Amino acid sequence: MNETTRSCRSCGTSNLRTVLSLGKTPLADRLLTEAMLGSAEPMYPLTLCFCPDCSLVQIAETVSPQELFCDNYPYYSSFSPALLRHSRDNAEQLIRMRRLGAQSLVVELASNDGYMLKNFAEHGIPVLGIDPADGPARVAQEAGIETLCTFFTQDLARRLRNEGKTADVVIANNVLAHVPDLNGFVEGIGVLLEDTGVAVIECPYVKDLVNHCEFDTIYHEHLCYFSVTALDNLFARHGLSLNHVERLSIHGGSLRLFVARKRQVSEGVRRLLEDERTAGVDQFSHYRDFADRVGELRGSLLGMLHELKREGRGIAAYGAAAKGATLINYVGIGPDMIDFVVDRNTHKQGCYMPGKHMPVYPCEKLLETLPGYCLLLAWNFADEIMQQQARYLERGGAFIIPVPTPRLVANTEAVAHG
Ligand code: JHZ
Image (tube, rainbow, N blue to C red; front, side):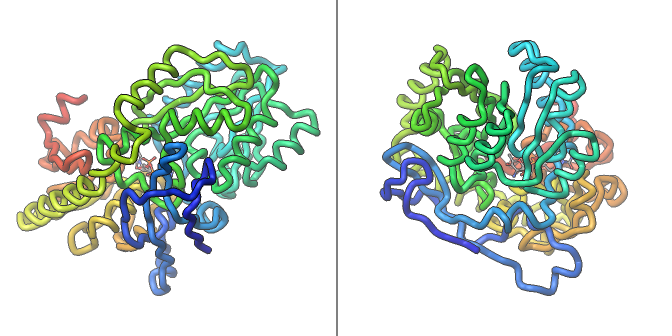
């Protein structure tokens, strides 16, 4: 099921202006099994828009969340060591800051395989996960993390509150962009929070997306691309205050938001709002040349790949990431160019990439076959992946990093990174 909207997902006005069209693309996390290869794949238009009224960048299309998240969703957070470290550090900081203990409750929305909540549970802090993807939710339950396998909604928040379950901390990482009922979701956070509770929310930052040409992070799961300005408007509408914001490097540049009922806005929030006004993030003109820059990137990446292919040493790709699906489908990179993709996630291995159908293998395949080049689709974990693959680099392999402008990294540079 697919709907196209011309009214803003946050403020509801109908002045949306188109920023970029990526054409029709398959669903980025719908990897195919061998049996699925013979049947038609759902393909949907992907159009990035800007709302001049509340500044929210968003896509026009809504694919049903059931189709996106409920059928063999292959993303399991725990396969990315850098994400695990990032989450543990954040959990430990929250435990200290909020003095959490056996009497507290931490609720995570989109808790996936329990990658985050296990850090609280280890300290004896009661936790509750909520996630609609049954595979990851089952892994969390098996690890002893209480998890409701369902979508978080206002109604669920009310039900939990009626059962006496209000949260000292609500965590919502990389989920705000995924929800079609954005206002209902934020309202639900307010319902679930204890009076003195805090919601800690991470989402990719649209300013980084645009500045670093991270167009591949645009796909149907990501309905919204947030600026601090748009977020401030959104939370204020629900009686919540965006009190503090941190900028993070994860996922190509993210925001960590601290949201509460009581207004205690930090100087940092005011500064970021001011920076966005100065940079024009709240104006359509800020996004006007983005489509041209994305088109240029496509041209230069294709040019580079054709040149490298002619050397005859083979090209593979690393990371069957959702963003990788946008990249290969929009740029037009198929099995004639890329022989195979490697990924640590065992749920993705043995499957085929959406749209272009390159097979996904375990990472060992890279050293076994030694292709001359490897396109890094999971470029957001570049340093970590290149360190893991030091032997591939030592043996003459090189990585192609596609964004912000395609570049080659061979052994010497990788050692400098390490
Ligand atoms: P990764 C994810 O998108 C999921 P994806 C989701 N769509 C979202 O909102 C964004 O993040 C923010 C693999 N890998 O996380 C694991 C290795 O093989 O960058 C993943 O399959 N070895 C909900 O999918 C992929 O790469 C490694 O060492 O675009 C990375 O996917 C590491 C670190 C990762 O984003």
